[in-house]
Length: 272
Image 1: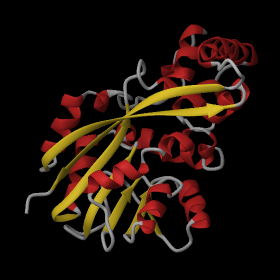
Image 2 (image 1 turned 90 degrees about the vertical axis):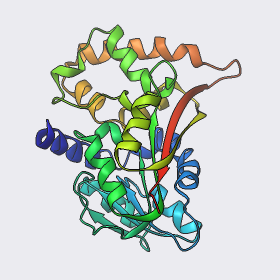
Image 3 (image 1 turned 135 degrees about the vertical axis):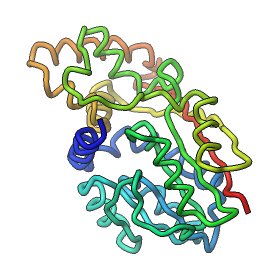
Image 4 (image 1 turned 180 degrees about the vertical axis):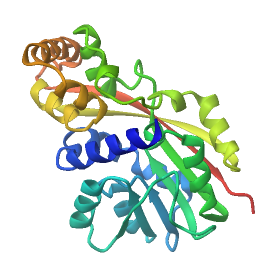
């Protein structure tokens, strides 16, 4: 799975750099401050932001007085992050093989990265390795589809339309594994962290039209986007029709849509 899937993800997210912020980035932004809080990021903290994407977490860390370094596998995301945040250091690299020495950061965070790693235990161990004694490590993930309603909309539409995502996507990690508290706690403890904890964050994203929601979600995912691109026009139209029926549940009486979703955050500290 590893090399083929990583290249698939790197290429896919590079291509989504301009559209990620339309919907998905708006949702993930709501978890930035809780993630930094759990990792203990404060003035003077040297922070590693793993899978930095467009650099939103790194930029928020700067506002706290921290000195972040963002790392990502997708060149397109890094280019966009550098344009938006020219004062922040961004480097290309693999979350499972971080190009930094032991204990070189005061904290590390990984926003919505675990379900993109072929070997998440290795990624968590690498994040812990580069953090000094007493420092914090925190990760965020989407909850399971029945609670992470926003991120499950396209998947439900594909299912209703009878489309199998596996046909267009390389063998990939489990999207929902670390939504399970036991799995997240085991991951954190396995990386050598102490004082581990899980928090749940409920958010919502509002849009004016179903079309806005459709284009934003398609532009903020790689696996589902690739699945849609692999279909013929008739099948894509069938998926879109199914999507419209799915999102009708979230229509507001006075117009527009509001879709709730749930995020899990897990964190711990390196032993002193």
